[in-house]
Image (cartoon, rainbow, N blue to C red; front, top):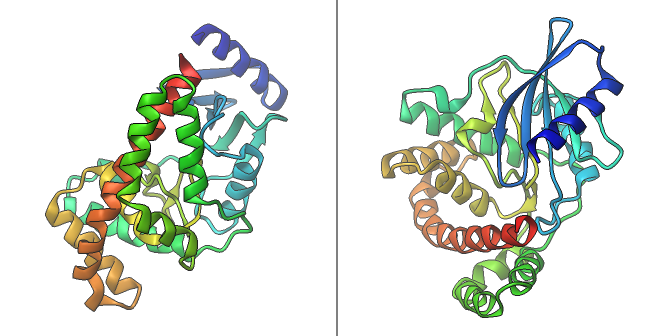
Length: 267
C-alpha cells in the first residue's frame, strides 16, 4: 500500500515539478498522508487525501477554499491539484507551530486569536448540517454493526438541543480541527488542514480546539478569556467556559462515530 501511494505521488509530482525531486514522508493518518518535497532547492508540502467516503468532504470545494484563504494569508498557497483533488501540492511554510511553544498560556492565547480570525472569514462555501453529517456517520457504522449504530444514536440523543442549535443558529466559518500542530507561527500565522472546515457554531469549533489539544483547565480559561476580549465580550468568558462543557460532550460522541465510520473505509 505504501509503495503504491508513493508511486502515485511520484507520478503526480512529475507533472508539476522538475524531474529531480525528493520525497520525505511526514505523516500517515487515518485519512491523509503527507510529504515534504524538495525540487531545485524549493520546498513544497504534498498531501494525499484518500477516499473520504464518510467524511462529508467535498475535495474540490476544499481546494477552492484553501485558495481563497491563501489570498487572506490564512492558509498556505495551493500550487497544484490532481483532477480528483485527492492530491494537493502546497507551498512549504518554514515556520514552527504553536505546539512547539513551551508556554501553555501563550499557546492558548494564539489558539484563541486564531479561532477568532477564522470566525471572521466569509468564504463562499455551502453550509452543512450537523444533523445530516451525524446521520451519515450512523449509516456508515450501521453497514458493519447495526447494534453499535443504535447505541451511538442513543448517545447523540442527549445532545439533540445542541445539534438543533447548530443548524438554526447564525453560523460562522469554523476550522473544526484546530490542533496546535495546524497553526504555523509564520508572519502572519497560517493554518493548515481545512478538511473539516465549514459554517457552523463557534462553540463547537472552540470546544473542538480544546478537546484536540487536551488543554488544561487553566489554558481553557485563558483561551475563553482571550476569545471574549477579542470578540468584544470579555464579560461572557466564564459563561463560555460553562457552555463548552456540553459542546465537548457532543464532540466526543461525534469523534467516536467518526472513528467507527473510518473502520468501514479501511477494513
